[in-house]
Image 1 (cartoon, rainbow, N blue to C red):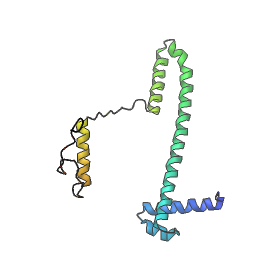
Image 2 (image 1 turned 90 degrees about the vertical axis):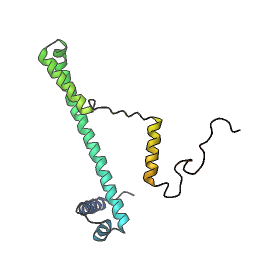
Image 3 (image 1 turned 135 degrees about the vertical axis):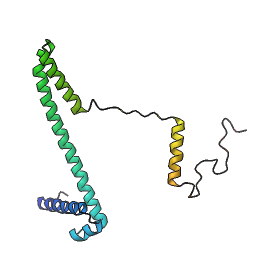
Image 4 (image 1 turned 60 degrees about the vertical axis):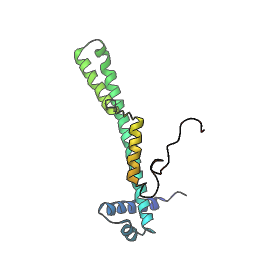
Amino acid sequence: MVASKAQQASTAERRGKAIRMKIEGATYTEIAAALGYSGRNAACADIRRALEKHVIEEGLAIEAWRELELARIDSLQQAIWPEAMEGNPRAIEAALKILDRRAKLLGLDSAIKLEVLTIDALDAQIQRLEAELGAGALGIPATPREAGQAPPAEGPAG
């Protein structure tokens, strides 16, 4: 069921107050009591929904703005392109600046980070994580050797 305009406005106002209270350091329990939520979990969930909605709306607005900027860049490129292709140095310089701006807007100039992991590096990472989790402290052996077992033999059992 769709909420009425009055209910939507009331919910938006309460969420705004809840977010302000959270920013100011209030606990979810305090927010729930002050704003009439059924409990701390309801206040927490409502604030999370509000923030998620804001992030989605913000992302859509940014994407729309990016599309507008790309359309402007396309128009500028189209206007300057014939002169640049004829060799006009000023037009070539302008076209290069337009292309550079498009690359920046689309993130084409961003550095690409590649990480290559070896089996040894993965094993070391697994051991580090197991140590952090305290698997040994819980009585769970991290590896067969720690449990006093031999590693599995390779090939068919004999």
